[in-house]
Figure 1 (tube, rainbow, N blue to C red):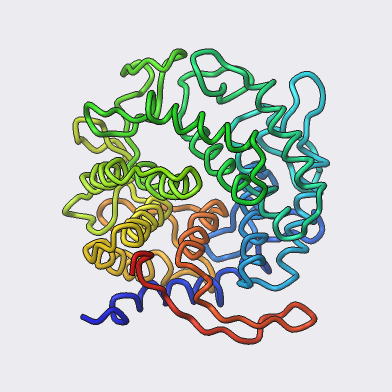
Figure 2 (figure 1 turned 90 degrees about the vertical axis):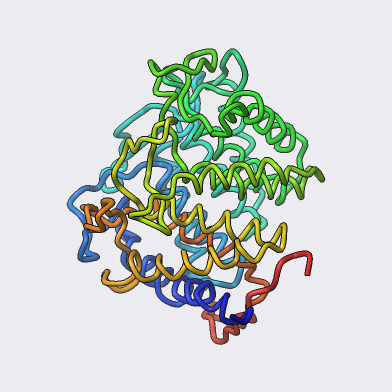
Length: 407
């Protein structure tokens, strides 16, 4: 099989994302009256009855369209709507005062807070959106809000034993996932601005990963912990999410380039641990969650873990020029297109199946757009020749998938 044949499914996925999904989602999932993105669409692609939106969901859609605009993969309208949505998000969800931060969820129609909890996960997604809004526009307002948000995290979510409290309420169990996305946001800010405060926090989070999240004895990423990072079934520490192990591969490789370090063995171990969660009945897909003894704890396979596994394959191929990872990426991209992106409304996806292949999703969640886009962004859009007219529309595209970085 030639290199061109190997990459064709990846190019097909990229083309489908840019030509079909992004334009459709921009049209259907943006509420012009509320100046905000929706939380989800119904299975037929229509609006659901709910007007509640999580802050992280709005922020991630803002991020997608700001980043896509920067990559010449979306028209000016995408950036305009991203900025409008952020203005709405900030005016509704920013909580000033001693315990400042962005609240967890809001009603987009009523412009009121629904859940006032301050969660590290939501702050992290807002920071990611701000990094790319700043890069897309050069507007120092976005950098100022990022700095304000970072200060709020340090103050409102201060915690003992390292890291940050996942919520202002200090709810247990403690979670690695919000820290992972804080790491992602700090990397984006590091790449965009290079300020020491972003760099220092990225280093701190990676150190936390090495000392607490990654269980070297078993070669696993732990998800849930006690207040001092204790590992115990009482806190659900025996529950493992293979999608997150794959996601850390992608993030650590980005960190490597910025920090000028080499974590090849760690990335290989994480990807191997994620692959151990492949079930013969679902190959090439991974199920959502396992116990650390190998038993299945969630008999479902959402779209997002598949995209994270795909990103890990692509990342490791680029880092090590290993043809096995490229072949794995080809097979997985093909099956994602076939099972998740086909037989859905135009520009949409089917989000969740059980292990027997039965669709069990009851909506099309907007959160999956972020995971799909980050796969496309990782396919190196510098290989796309795109021209934009004066009014911001895209008029020409030539797709090319570059080989591994070492070639």
